[in-house]
Image (cartoon, rainbow, N blue to C red):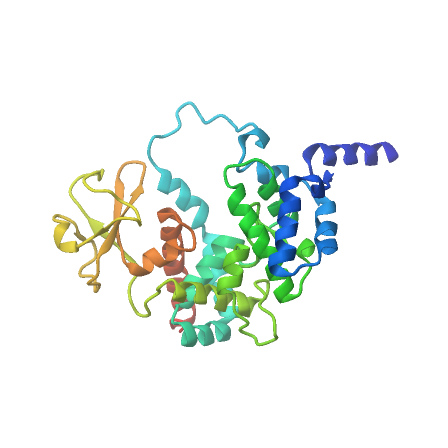
Length: 341
């Protein structure tokens, strides 16, 4: 038995799960601590204690520095050139995610109604975000937030400056909301809670919806309202559409640039028309291309589609949120006979 315990300990140390480092010896950390003391009035001894025993997060660092990355599996010899959306869709829009989304929206329908009244964001979009980000709260992250952000802030990687900023925000947030930063779990990048907010977004957009004196993204009511607040502050327009599929001539579309960054007047998009009748939206649109195995699927994205990309800067991510929201909404109405608002 003792031999097994020793072997397990050695294995954990080898994978970096138990490897502890004293970051107080790093000049960058000393400067960081002095800045937090001078500018934000932290106690130096408290910060030194936090940085004295940091578990080095090799798995997280490997996402941003190839040196620490596990050797990737080789892609199949006949890896398809097309079909990126087919693969993404399979991962993000599975039947179970839709079913669990309907149940989640049903379980918290009174909160969703109150949030909709205040922020104007439909329940299905908030549900879809939570479903994608944390699988409705079942996967909120297994990384220690403080240790992860410390590793990413002070070990060489392409985004260390950004992670230093987020570490600063985590400490400020812990002071403001009265929690121990060592006790918070996060994603490999330091995102927290049901909606997976980075600490800076947490501070900027989280709300105390249940009025208990704290903003907690681990609490359902606060998390739901905080996502709605995030959308509203980024320009969500109540009652306006998000996206619609369009028709065009051919199987592959390469005539114009596509993606959430590019806006077009519909009058200039000759030969492109809504696939399912008229579309009640008069503003400029984004052209969104979804790469299927045998053709390109083309969509118009409205202002509200762009708002979703503020949550995650990816057209595929925003489209997954949109389509998951629509599937949850349709399934909810089919089961319960009404649309939740």
